[in-house]
Length: 108
Image (tube, rainbow, N blue to C red; front, side, top):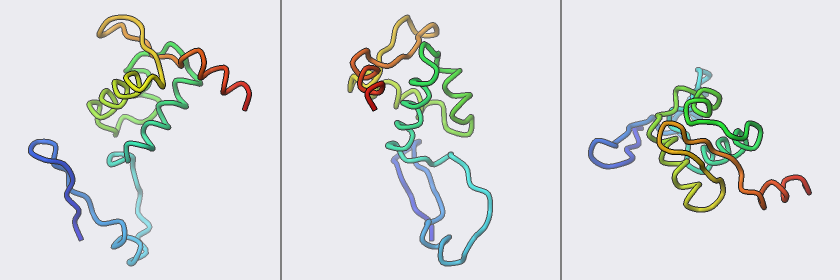
């Protein structure tokens, strides 16, 4: 009934989605336990729509209920994978799409 993810201080507990489906739960959902691949896509679309955005602007737009450390980790990962680029230092860091990615999006 309960699913455990993570280790140590990062341990999170959630209700098993299969259990929720079986009982036809119609309650409100949130983005608190969003999967990494979905969070990456949310950030990508946000940065594509609003280039040169800072962390707090991105966090505000995609959802404050998502843990800020999870978003920061995903932004760092996306920069390392060269999906997005960053300019500036620490608090003044701005994120934007890589030039070749922007050209590919225009073709689609």
